[in-house]
Length: 153
Image (cartoon, rainbow, N blue to C red):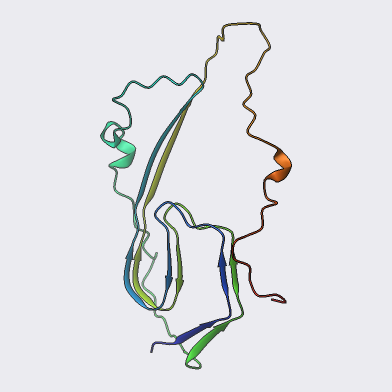
């Protein structure tokens, strides 16, 4: 039995990296993310980097969890709709789904590898670190959201 979803408001600040916000019924949602990030203190890039084939981490099959034993499930859909006052979500990222409505099949995969390479013997005076000024720290987080939920909710 399909049910109607009644949602007062939805506020999502950010959706990124193979993520989906689906409003309405859906049959299949398939997501995939492969991330390979190299961070170097000294920006030297050789041009042949970033191949997923070089790392077996990306080729291994992801195990699908199975229930430990057979089970019987009984569902009672009391009523013909689901009512939600509102949703406030900070972010959806790295193969995530926000589904409002019914869905038959959902599958997602996210594989991330971060490599950080730092220089141990830096030239120049000892005990000196390098900082990059990106702006005032008090500005971060003080920006008004573009979409606000209704007042009083």
